[in-house]
Image 1 (cartoon, rainbow over the protein chains, first blue to last red):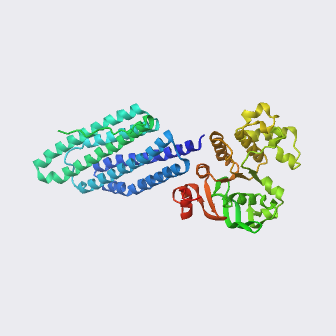
Image 2 (image 1 turned 120 degrees about the vertical axis):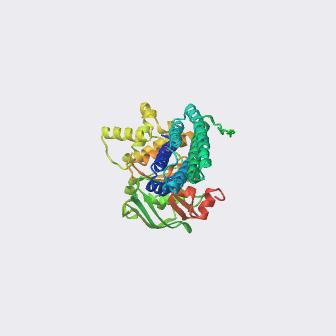
Image 3 (image 1 turned 180 degrees about the vertical axis):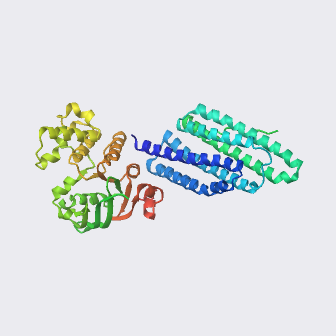
Length: 221
Length: 252
């Protein structure tokens, strides 16, 4: 086996491990909100340090491979992509921390309304993350494109949640704090989706060598 | 933590009045690859020649200090025993020109007068050539001369010759500098595979090669060790400014 091939295999394993941690945090963030679970919120916030350590470690290993192995062509595209995906994953975990912090501000009050669209956003994020990583590991451009399209679902849900909560706020200003928290949380899931599409764009870069930015800004109105 | 197989204490080497190695202290980890790099004339070749006691064979050369192989000072051992335990492969492939491929592999036994049965010989030849990935390429003409092979094959034959003696340490002195890139890559992959069974010390002026294959790197400059540590650390955040300058091509 080529020396670099072996190192890339280990790097991918480490990346998959980081993905598993981030995936768990995304799931936990919704559990904490649904159950108004203060302890879980705190655990998510504290647990971010571990994800940061993993991310730093992964970054260090990528740099060591660049310094010692001089990857070229597809190897270089993979190694550099892992560096960028690492940043996306770390940012996703940060959004989960923000969600947990936002949840803490409303944890003492009953939910304004049953949570339906927000759990759907979370489910979509998880589905997209799994698909994105699968597309990356298997160099599956078709799958990557399908996942990128799913980001529309998140955008639409985010907008829908905003409009709906706006009516609650207009109805009774005492709802503003809780409604606003949910709007912010929805935006965090929407941003997580954007980071996942970045991962899919990396798959396309690895396979086709094209650097593209999908999902150009679309007007909401 | 890894085991240390070799400990070098206050090693000084001279060619006449020329003090070429200055107070080297270093430890080599077992079954790891340690690269020795540095600009020309920094003492890296002299350093590994001291480790299997070749340096003292040069007229006017002198060695001071101690080198312990598993706790035993090699300068208190018989040089032949030292060279059995610490094998060496040189810059240019040097199979014995008059010997067949087969005889080249078992040359170490022949030259040391170690008697082997036909079966033992066959086994050693096959295993050693397999270890260096040469068996399939040469098994049908084992009794042709070693010099009949290509440069890269010759170098692998020389490594097989060293490996056949089951050394504890293998010293490689710029083993790929006379080879083309493809042969170089094969040798590098072979070196990485060999560390499963033997400790390797690799002298190289090729910085990229030190990075690719080694676990630890020692940076020599003007006969001194400037820095020693894991390759991954040294190639990303070296501690010494001189190492940084050498790696970034500012001198050397």
